[in-house]
Each structure stands twice: as structure tokens, then as C-alpha cells.
Length: 165
Image (cartoon, rainbow, N blue to C red; front, side, top):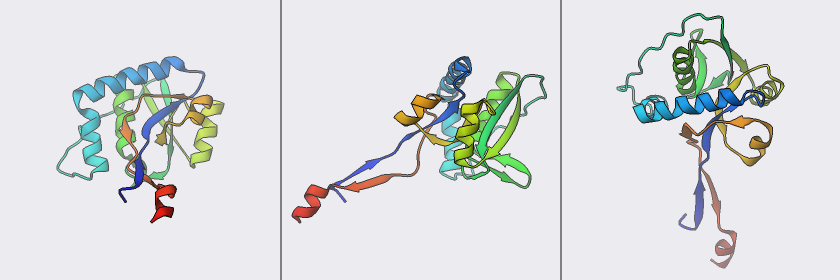
């Protein structure tokens, strides 16, 4: 395997193209959360599965200002519905964002293709679903700064070297 390349992609939130101010504000939130160690805490708890790491409870108070958050319904450890409650790294991150901005959070579940269509048509304001930052997506939507790296890796064998052995 020493002749293979290992790649992972940054995970970002996608924002509807009509809301650049939301993307900028979310990036500010991510920067603060990274500096405070909150994103690392979430990653250790949800991605690494360290149950000793306790996530602070974040209550999102009702507000007339609602953020429509698109998610994929069964996407552990990022977000999933368990016992009629949304849980996961991205769910906790969005709860904290909404609480810090005095927004109510309206979670809208979709399949992945439906989620990206809902985002592009403005049915959701922001989508969090382990979305990888790609040049093609940057053409169609606003993408936040990365808040995690994909735990999935792609390995490709160097074909030229494989054929010589």
C-alpha cells in the first residue's frame, strides 16, 4: 500500500446561494467554536466515539427568527433521529449556532439529492450532512469553512507502478 495515495475531504455546511451573510456569520461561529475547542469536543464524542467526552447541553429557545436546517435522516455520527430526537455532531453544532444567534431551529430531513435541491431552491437555509467541499458544489451553493474531515478515505493504487511488479 505504500504506492497508494490517501485522500480525505473537508466537511462543510452548504448555504443557499441567496444568503451570503448567513455563510459569513456561520464561518465566524465556526472560527470561535474551533478556538474554544468545541469542534474538537464534538469530534471526539461523535466521530471517535469517546463517551467519556460530555457535550454541554444546548437549549434552543423559541424565536420568531427561524433557521431552516436541512439534514439527512440517518447519517450517523453527523445527524440522525433517535427516539424521536435529533442527535449527532452536526445537530449539536447547529443547536449551539442557533442558540448563540437567538434563532429557532427547524430541522428538515431529506435524502442527499433532495437536500441539495432543497438548498438550491431555498427550501432550507443551510444544509449539514457530512457535505464534502468540491469544486462542482462551489459552483451551485455557498460552502462554509471546514469543521471536520471525512472519516472515509479513498485509496488509489498507482497504476504505473502496479503494472511493473
